[in-house]
Every structure is written in C-alpha cells, then in structure tokens.
Image 1 (cartoon, rainbow, N blue to C red):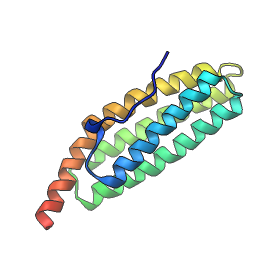
Image 2: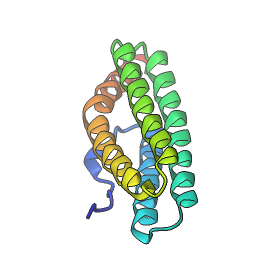
Image 3: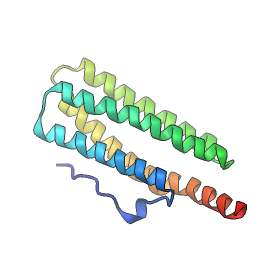
Image 4: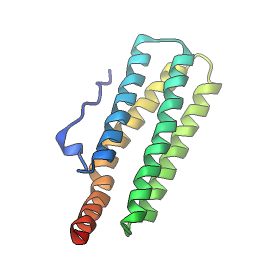
Amino acid sequence: MVDAVLWKKEYSVNIQEIDEQHNLLIQMINDLLQVIIQKSGQVTVYEVLERLIHYTRTHFEAEEALMRNADFPGYEAHKARHDQFISEVEALERRAKISQGSEQLVGMEMLFKLKDWLVDHIVVMDMDYSRHVQNRSAVRS
C-alpha cells in the first residue's frame, strides 16, 4: 500500500507562499489516498482529482510568475515540465472517466505519479529556481 506523503524540512524552498502551496498539494495527495483506501464512490475520486488538478494549475501559475519576475534563466524548461505534467494528469483523469469500474485503479496510478513527481520536482527543479529567486532578492536588498 502507498504511504501518505509527509512534509519534510528538505522540501522547503524557503519561499513561504510556495512552501504553503506545496504543503496543500501534499495534503490533497493524501486526501486522494484516503478516498482510494475508503473506496468511496467514483464521484468522490473525481472530485478530489479535479480539485487537485485545478490547484496544481494555480500553483504552477504562481511559480511561473515568480520565475518570470526574477528573470530565472531556466523558466522555459521549468514551464515545459509543468505543462507536460498537467497533460499527463489530464490524460489520467480522462481515462478514469471512461473506465467504468476502474476509477480506484486509475486513482492509484494518479497517486503514484503525483507523489513521485511532486517530491522529485520540489527537491530538484524548484530548489533551482528558489536559489535564483533568493539570490536576486539578496542582490536587490
């Protein structure tokens, strides 16, 4: 079985707004896990997935604005990873909607993808832009 995602100190990008958003994304992933474990009806799985996808877009927009404002040189590559991830998650969501009776299975696949991607994305890519943003802030001070 999949364990819940727990916030770790090393996930902090030292930007309060982004850390709060990452924490909320982790909570939403854990909500999806609970829905799957409880085997609630498919509407509940879809509701959690839709809420998670919507909030992920909102979070990505905030990160991208931060990167643009700081003239982050890796912006295009980072945004491309965001776009790719949203496309993959939307494909899973579509598959869940047309796969009657397999929403739990698709939910688990989504859960693994979200969990692995979020943690990897935070500790690798987000740390990269975070250092740049913090260095730019220090120079401007």
